[in-house]
Amino acid sequence: MQEDPAQARFVRALVGVVAASALAYPLLLSAVELGFAQLGVVDVAAVVFWLSVAVVCSVAAVAALRWGVARPVRSPWLLTGLAPPAAFELWVFWPLLTG
Image (cartoon, rainbow, N blue to C red):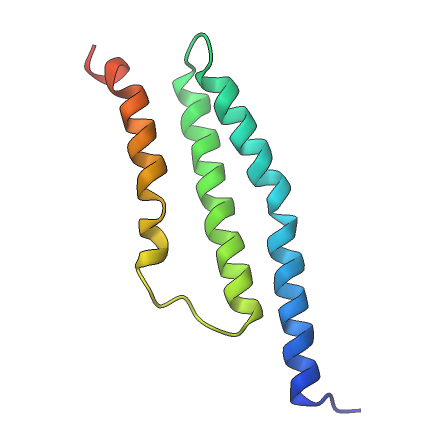
């Protein structure tokens, strides 16, 4: 039995939403762990690890949503959205890096 194209697009969109929402909890966990790694005594290794996990989860969530609507990521502006958090982390760690 053949699926019609509209139903196939609908199923693909739902799978994309489910895949992206499955990445919400790891992204939330990495944000909480990143916050704890910066409180009190700063653990640089933990900050780098959890920041990397957050970046991977963010990019994967956007990729899953874009896959669900069958649109490839063609814009470098997607990655520029990571610049403000990276600048903030650099600002937080600048005293440790220079001192």
